[in-house]
Image 1 (spheres, one colour):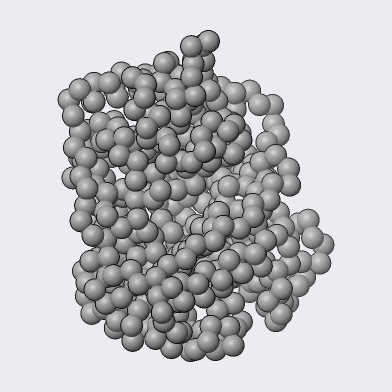
Image 2 (cartoon, rainbow, N blue to C red):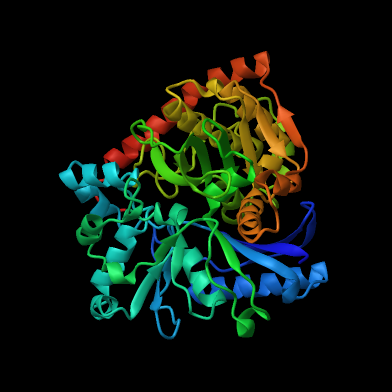
Length: 502
């Protein structure tokens, strides 16, 4: 066998990569798909368009690598988490649009749960907080607003899955309805202690257990691809949520190793080993992977908007033509000119968890230029990451050896240096950009024997570029944090006085 196929299904597009024995990238392809915004705060995808984007990128990647499906040893899947899809078990037809993880339509339901005994039960069993981000309130919303869906679900005709389950179902020709422990842990329906779907949580949200996928190991047996769909029978042998895939792809599979992925949102994970630790207020506990994909734990911090704010500068305001311009624009000014941008378009995540917060820009003057707002957008990513790591490490982000960074914004050298200065700890960026895909490929390759040891697939990462914090940069970053804190307080004040609604 020549390669492992990694499918990286993200929020705005799908990517397929073929990785050879020595970690060499043999071929890749990428396609965007449409985003739908039916009402303010609502974000949807077409599940069929997601599947089409995956199917086409796989075909393109194989063609570019000069390979046929029969030369693929295994398929690994990594995916946007929490996005909720309901479909007909027998026909594979989506029952409606997919509700995306960014969607805020269940904010009022989540607000009603706060301060109740149910909220504490959710926190204790799932390691998560009550927020529209997660899947359970999305499923509940769909079942309540579509009168025949509940009876069809109870009869076993309608099933739920996050995007990984949907892709496994389609790739196997409808033969397998399964997920892995990392994706299951993001639903508000899965107990981290029993490592199974929790009947009390299913009852709380009115979700029939029969509609849930079987939970398997991240490196495990997910059936084989349907030859009519894929062109050959190939084992689907790795499934992992995108952030846990990036953690694994960085080689951070032991306690006290950390990574940050800068994508549509930004997500910080700190591996905590095979024993569940007590998380600070606002910090999530989630399932992760050990060296061979076995169940482990991690702390997670979720910054709901990161790269998406740069997309807004490009598509919404026309301030930039391409995100790559942001580095030169940030360097073109000495500072932000007193401008701070809190990009809370989808609310605030860790450690605040305020779904009613909205994007806030403060400090504008007649002297404000577009470069100032672009730089403020980049600084917001770094300051938010510091807030998350402060919560995880009790205010000591410099207690970790380094922060391993990946994702699109990790290619911005100015941002990575600023991030190191803000944290007071080195930031290391591997040569390979697609760490989520590498993580999924690694799990699938280990499961099928394509690689015998987990260190072997790490050759795909290449050499790290390390950004060391500087004394001058540390002083400037610390001075800027006071203004960032005031801007955050402004956004949270807006939310606290929102008077309900989204």
